[in-house]
Amino acid sequence: MSVSLEVTKREVRPRSLRNKLRHEGKVPAIVNGYKVESTPIAVNAAELEKILRENGLNTVITISLEGKKVNTLIKEYQSDTFTRNLTHVEFLSVDMNEETEVEAEVTLIGESAGVKAGGVLAQNLYTVVVSATPDKLPERVEIDVTSLEIGDSLTVADLPKNDEYTIVTDPEEQIVAVTEPQEITEDEEAGEAAEPAVIGEDEE
Image 1: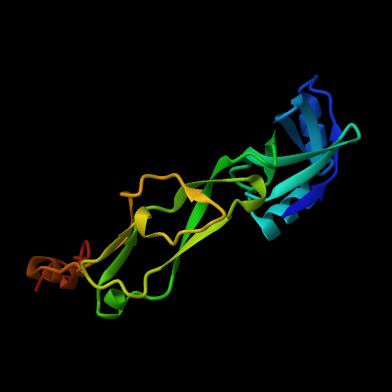
Image 2: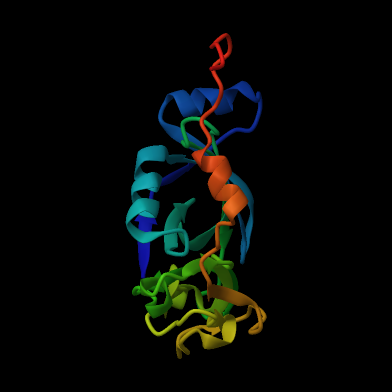
């Protein structure tokens, strides 16, 4: 799947132009990669954020650059710490027939039997690296944890196989585990039950 995005070439000097673009609702960006020389561009911030919100980071974005259609993936992006607004984006031009590697989110499905029995579920791996042609790249990879009992775990090797992409991450890496609930000792219970002393209060 691919979506279209309008872009315009931009000047890189002076640096104050970047702030001017942002005030105009645009994001400074750059595109490079397959058959494309590194080119500074600007994109509409609202349009790009809508694409990412609806399709995710791994979708193919087709941009028009000097009259030429270019298929791209978002390689990197920067955002404001406080507003979370995009401040810079790097687009990577890709060959639609050549496999590329990206990170895909690992999503847990279902409620573990071990958790229902009082265990604690801990997810240790949140993304995996996958390889596929750009149009087949998944945004997420799902794994069912319903059958996990206390003491059970799942690794990358347990992820469901898919003909459209290959999982590159080490198959022995643990994704999730269900452990025994942590026991509270008598000392900890006593500490929680004790009321803090009030400064200045007379002791009886």
